[in-house]
Length: 88
Image (cartoon, rainbow, N blue to C red; front, top):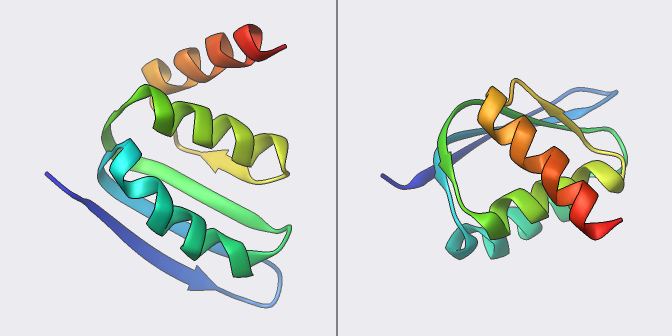
């Protein structure tokens, strides 16, 4: 399965809804999509079913830069917490 990115914006925030599998091969496109979003970015992971380590590190970096990561599954949240601990 590939990654699909849906984008929605209003005057206050930009929502990127990720659907499918997020792998290192998708990070370039995600960076392109995120670059113009500014500080009010929400990345919705409700329909993400698989990530790799580079994707988790990318999500941790996005969160550190101020993005809100929403609807992440428990395994992704746990993995992100562990990566934050490793990087501290």
